[in-house]
Amino acid sequence: MNLLGKINIDFMAKRKVAMYFSIVLIIASLSSLVVRGLNFGLDFTGGTVVVVNFKESVDIPKIRNLLAEKGQGDAAVKQFGSSTDIEIALPPSTQKPVDADGNPDESAESELSNEILDIIRNDSGYEIDKFRVEFVGPQVGKELVEQGSLALLYAIIGILIYVTFRFEWRFSLGAVAALVHDVIITAGVFSITQVEFDLTVLAALLAVIGYSLNDTIVVFDRVRENFIKIRKKNSEEVFNISINQTLARTVITSLTTLLVLFALYIFGGAMINAFAFALIVGVLIGTYSSIFVASTFTLALGISRQDLIPIQKEGVDLDHIP
Image 1 (cartoon, helix red, strand yellow):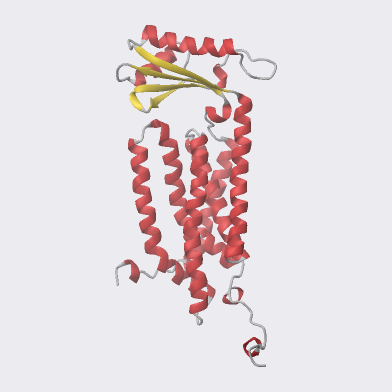
Image 2 (cartoon, rainbow, N blue to C red; image 1 turned 90 degrees about the vertical axis):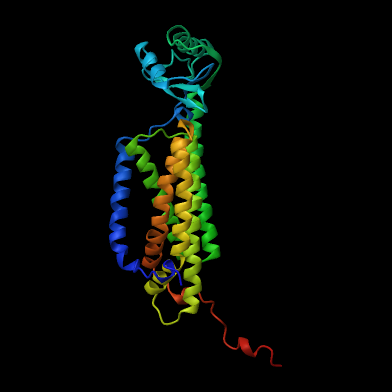
């Protein structure tokens, strides 16, 4: 038997400590979300994006400092794909006057982008090859916030229904509690660090829900099997045995996933840094919650062997007798 197969950790004995730890993390996350909020990207807030392609590699700090000197200190400059491409994002605060609907007119958008391009052409010392200008209106950003929130809500409701039919309602509530736990803490980390929250991060949150659920389902499936096979153990002992039996799979899956995500975060460039960061946080929290939060919540609801064994009617074995 391998080393991981010999591991016998009493996880459930530590569930109260884990519960307090989770409560602290959730309170900290919610407090930060209320006080500081999320640093929404232009996908949600609206604004102007200028993508510039140069004929040579660009020193991004130099461009950032140049724009700040010229009165565009709010501009966010980052690498866009290759070393010769940059993306300059300007939040709504730098926009020109808006119309009655709250949207900048085309002349204002053109004026702002031309001002940025003129600064780069005249003062940066770099030669521009080509460029592209895009604008996201505030109304579009508002709709994205609403639709993104609904996407998370629908995903959680769908999972609640799925796990209820596949297992039992107590398992379903335990799985959903773990998912809500993961989403709140991951969003809280983004609020605390003020890393930009854009559509790629929203996609990462949905991916975190799927990853965390997969881990939880693996544990719950083993719990259901062991409730039927192991007759002389109580619920807490069955959960402990099941978690230890699936621990090797959980650890190996999480570690290999994290290796890929750290590689993306380090070498993937600024465009996917936030996406990779969200998944790193989500995988760590999701692995923890599938072991402690989902199991603890399900145990607290009073799950037992009797809840998973179908009740047989009296005399069913005699139905074949005429």
